[in-house]
Length: 206
Image 1 (cartoon, rainbow, N blue to C red):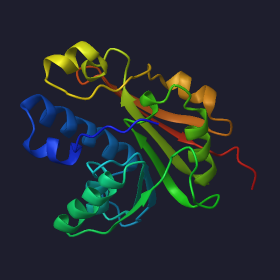
Image 2 (cartoon, helix red, strand yellow; image 1 turned 30 degrees about the horizontal axis):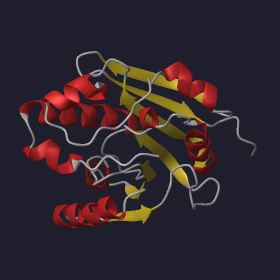
Image 3 (cartoon, rainbow, N blue to C red; image 1 turned 90 degrees about the horizontal axis):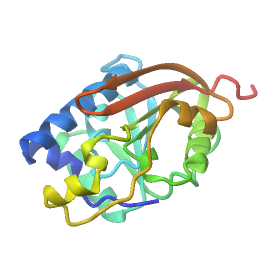
Image 4 (tube, rainbow, N blue to C red; image 1 turned 45 degrees about the horizontal axis):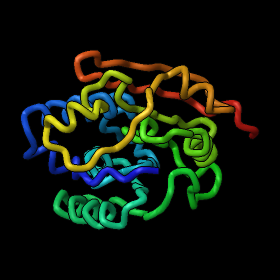
């Protein structure tokens, strides 16, 4: 897996106008897929949570959020952002392809802006399927292949110092890697170049 050093939580608030617009749109799409604020709080796992740009708002919506990331620095910043927001987010350092959680641990597993960073996303997606409850949902979100943030030239023009390699993100491609899940819905924002798909691992054995 790759680590993106950017603090998207902070970029969503004090970044460029383009960054603020993109992160706000991404959060709206993910919140809509998750279900927004609800009296029925979900046990939610945010894979590749970074500094908490999605984990913290989802905790503010009342969900019980666990975030996992490869970077100890990200998890430390996540704890700070969550504390400043007055919410609890459990941060775990680890790999999304080798989750240290029992089967059927979560109502919802979120993989946002992470699948497109994996040349072989199968283990990541199948681990999400394993830890998601049969009646739960897996939400996969990411930039489509022509999203400007995925283009090295655009990153250089924006002054990005760290380059991350990306691979195309498609809903059909995700479906081929998940063995026990059914596509429930998907939405695309063509302006932002972002896709959000919801799947249910309903073919898991009872």
